[in-house]
Amino acid sequence: MTTTRNDPAVRDAAERLDRAHRTGTPCAPVRDLLPAGDLDAAYAVQSLLTGRRLAEGRRITGWKVGLTSPAVQRQLGVDTPDFGALFDDTAVPDGAELPWGAVLQPKAEAEVALVLEHDLPHERHTVADVIRATAFALPAVEVVGSRIRDWDITAVDTVADNASCGAYVLGARPVPLRDLDLRTAGMVLERRGEPVSTGAGVACLGHPLHAAVWLANTLVRLGTPLRAGDTVLTGALGPMAAVAPGDVLEARIDGLGSVRAVFGPAAAEGDPR
Image (tube, rainbow, N blue to C red; front, side, top):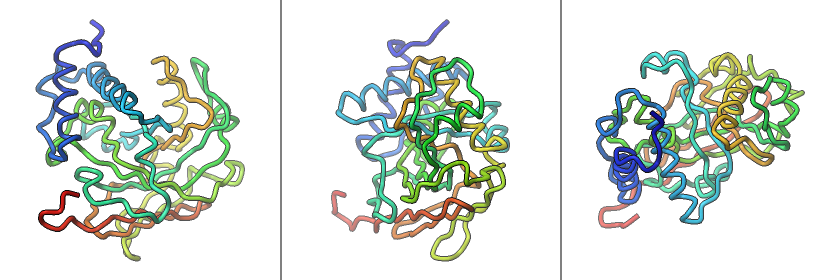
């Protein structure tokens, strides 16, 4: 049976997550509201919430791929990545301050971002299709966040919660793919000069372009293909790093350069921020 936005369980799960988003108070997991392990139901929740964001005047600027690490997939009991939508008001300029509290329970990941200049409309794509469609690559820090209390998540929970999207920071120096070997590109994510995460492109489904192919094929099947102008966050190159108020994290990726995510201070007591 196909799960739709109109199913009562989907609406209840969406309302729980939306309340957490609106109030800034993390909620209980939503897996108790949905059929066990049902990713279709979780994506129906995500779709309902995405529709609400669009109705509020927000704009989709691209998509993120998550669960690209085999270890994380095993931890959550799945054998496939997931995806979520990126919105215009979650894009943070390189080095600009992200107010503390803008993302619930934030963590940071360093990733390769692709910016497209051509649509990817085919039923099945190749790596060559993605290369031809890509204008350039950028270094990125994805600030993942969870509306679910204490990150107590299964795959169903994170998919419903827009793949735990929070915010994203892109570098400002575009690099053509012809100048890169993304599979072997090393990454280090530092907090004030101290490494907090390291990795390489091979950690992302074997190659960041493999993640982009998976996303392109998946979105075509769902009727929302990747379009020119979309930004694609291809997935983490290393483990998530914890962040705290006032942190400055800098990601450096071989061939792509660097990008900084700056977190604001914690709000003072009584400050409505």
